[in-house]
Image 1 (cartoon, one colour):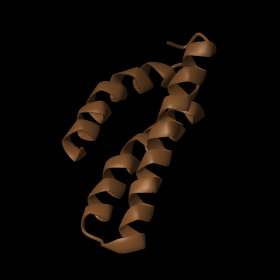
Image 2 (tube, rainbow, N blue to C red):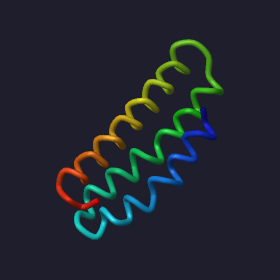
Image 3 (cartoon, rainbow, N blue to C red):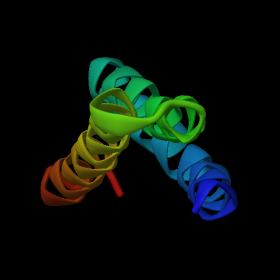
Image 4 (spheres, helix red, strand yellow):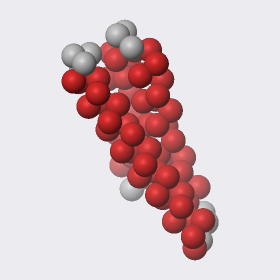
Length: 79
């Protein structure tokens, strides 16, 4: 899943660059969320038990936030 998330980062970056032209804050929030997901997955893979699970849940939250940023940008007509 880590490699899949990195692919999503690569695909999402140009879209967030376009968002930045209209709303720099929204784009920054999207970049933070987007880059947080693979970091949490990598961290969670090295930990066992509840701490590892918490990292995976954080990664899912970051992915959800990235999706919400993209949906918000689309609704605002930025993309």
